[in-house]
Length: 181
Image 1 (cartoon, rainbow, N blue to C red):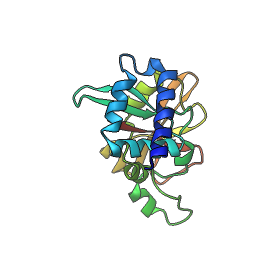
Image 2: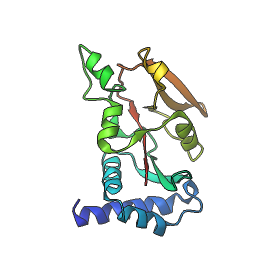
Image 3: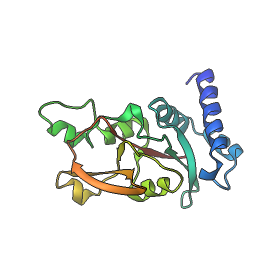
């Protein structure tokens, strides 16, 4: 990453961090900056999150690993990560009208993970997200083995978890990711 790109990304992240202090009580920007400067791979993953419309921000700490948790905080599912089926197996199984890719593989390529249901629900405590879109979430193996996958959204003031065939894809469904730094 060029120095100018790095500096621009850090300014964007700092501005979002300062504009949304309620997402990360007790976390100082100086500690975030120190971690990012020490972890070029994390900074590159955040750049990919930002480039695909995720608007990543710190939403807390992961105590066991003593790491900061970044999550996509865009109001709707990131626009650059929509129209994807759930995973590579689902993509390979489609015979016609294949989407451009899958959520799980794109997340892996970006260096992030799909949110789990509890992480998605925790994000919804910080604001209202996915009121017009939906987001694939990490799906338990027992559901995935039967051909299904889970997604979430927020409607009527509530967070809903749904199921769909993992091969499905929609223009308004993407995925949100998380990154530990």
